[in-house]
Length: 343
Image (cartoon, rainbow, N blue to C red; front, side, top):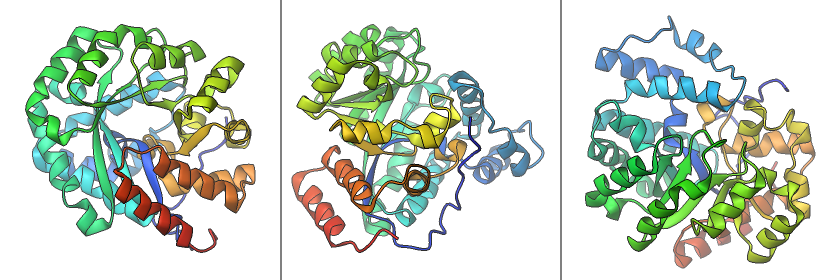
């Protein structure tokens, strides 16, 4: 496994390409400093003496070891203001990294399981998201993500609990521990979400096999695959993804930190682009994985020698793969076309 590719979050010496971020877990943007501030506000004792000590704990052997810490730290998120502060901190960083549109996952079950009402979560997040375009130039969407290691029944209850807030939610997703929890488990939940008019995405093919990608497409009816890097193991699946132009929201730093890929220099993204897949680059859980989305772009440029044209294609793909309305999409593509050298 390579060393961490952490870059200074807001200190790039160039103007980043305009881009959309489509695979971002808001709980995964909880920086240690904010975690300590919220813990103090809410009277919670963290098992770390300083933010630096907490940051040093971000050393994971696999997806599960990451998730263990990830869910432990959600305890500091208690009030609407906490969720608003979390979202605002991300939006400030994202804008500085060239993000013009963000479709943001949140995990309501991680909060309701500890007694935080789903309305508290959604109202807090949307209080920041609602004014993001005006304040940061970043339009947003909110994706309710089900925890796949919990039951389908729990997911259905969560969707029902979200009913009063569906006007604030653009899509549903599926995340957390993948292996042993195939997409088929959530067929009924996704059918109900589709009936309610929500867009559909799902994590598949990160740690799980390529068959999980096929299940997500055929049984859940998803429009976009989150991660999807293991599709390359199945030539017929790759051909289908190319023919149907199914977007893949790839997260390179995350893949390395969770040992799905040994080193960034060995990431399959160039092969995915060469195959004609509609690939996008995203940061996943950037506080934990060493950088935000522009840090991923710059890391790929350094490690894989991606060209300006390839980086622009990734940015263009991000707008194409988004759930933007056509007017906003055209506006952002025009901004990308007018952007100077990537630096």
